[in-house]
Image 1 (cartoon, rainbow, N blue to C red):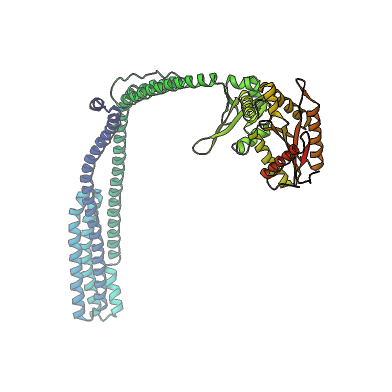
Image 2: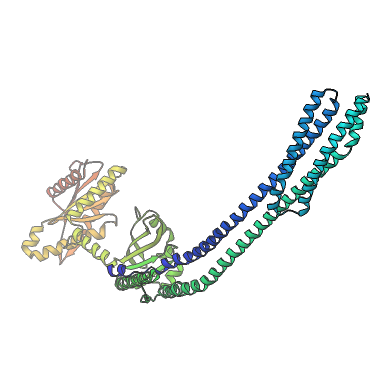
Amino acid sequence: MSATANTFKPKLFLLILVMPGILWFAVLAAGMQGLLSIRDNQAVAHQDRELLKLGTQAIDHIREAQFHFKSQVQHWKNMLLRGQDVTQRNLHLQRMEQEEQQVQEVLQQLPSLLQPLGLDPNILQQVASLQQQHRALGLHYRSALRVYNDSLQKQSAAHTAAMAADKVVFGQDTLTSDNTDQLAVAIVQQVQQLVMNAAERDDRWFSRQITYAAWILAAFILLILPVAFFTVRRHVIQPITLMTDAIEQVAQGNLQQQVAAQSMDELSRMGLAFNHMASELNRIHSGLQSERDKLTTIIVAAQEGIVITDRLGNIALINPAAERLLEKSAEQITREGFLNLLDDPDYLHAYLNQSGIEIPSTVVYHNRVLSFYAATIHDPDGQAIGSAALMRDITEEKRLEKQLRDLSNTDSLTSLNNRRRMEEILSEEFSRAKRYKLPLSILMLDVDHFKRFNDQHGHDQGDRVLQAVARVMHNTCRDVDSPCRYGGEEFCLILPSTALEGADRMAERLRYNVEQHRVDGLQVTISIGVAVFPLVGETAESLKKLADEALYQAKHAGRNCYRIAGQPLT
């Protein structure tokens, strides 16, 4: 990893930085050109502002000249109206001359303001003509004043004298005022034209700058596009295409697919990671395949039947042992479904729902005893991912179990229940009789003079006598009765649900059948003791003891007879 880190060359990272960098360089170049142009345009704009300033001053001078002219006219009229008062007349005359002087000064300053504006030459001529009109108007005012004074000396009325004076300057002040207004309007129009020209020039300049910047950007973009296309195609699209093809090959099962690393950029590192991932997947897949082969071998070779479903309940696996035990083909098992494995859907449904609790796991199916187990398998989130059934043929085991049980419960000589089994049966039957208030009888038998058979004819003959008695007991009693060998020459017969009358008949029938039987030509007799619950006995042990005492009573009574416990001796 350290060598890889040292040789890493981030091409894509550089590509991402370089391409926008070139574009930004184009934007910067256009911006710099715009800044330079703005600087030049600012100088022009400054010049325009100076010209507009001069134009504004010229307009202000015209307005000022108009103001002073109107003041001059007003003072002249006041002078006429107050002509009788010499002091007032002289004051207005002085003010009129001052206003005239102001007008002349303003008009003299106008040419210097108007020349930089590049105005129409007629405007300058109008200024000169206006100056001459003002000088002539001053002479008219003085002439009118003399006419006014002469009229007053001739004792004309003041009103008549004023009208005579006004005729001298009649219309001259109005004409001068109109010319001043025309000059002001002409200057205003010229200044407005300057403003419009400046605005049009600014618009043209802005449009020209936008066009120039657009051409610069377009040129850079046209230059970048081929380079970007070639670079992206070679360093991005081709490696991604190769990797995509490799991924598709892996998806189709070719885990040995590798991607050639041409350099050490980002995509090449991704290719190396993909190669490592593919190698690991191949290794894991090989391991899983090996484990699958082992598991398949175990499942196929197993003697236990195995059936597995997927999460949808469809059967996914059946081993040969399951086909053999169920006597069905794999196709039939798949077609019938998981719940019909044993042809009993209710049983299997209950088994799965209760997880086998309180459900028998041993079933008889097609003359076979099967040990059956089934369960639903869940993932860590509790979702069912399938079910599994395991079955094993335990017919032979059950047979051997029964054989062992019979051997452990059966007397080897007589094939009757042995003493241990007798104790179990007696305890069970006594508890049942006591719980349900049923009668229970027990017969204790003993072969008369058995020692003599052994002493005179040998032990083999004694064994044959015992076997003959056992056969008579087995043939005489009912299926529900339990004939047992108590020990030596003693036997026991347990009679469930048998009262005193039935026990009496059974004792007599059994005694008679033994007496009538011959063993190798020898006659055999037995003595019997009978005990009947609930007439006697409070426990199974006490009932057996009372029957045994009755047996000894029969022995003392001469043998080949029976006695009933709890009855008086006869």
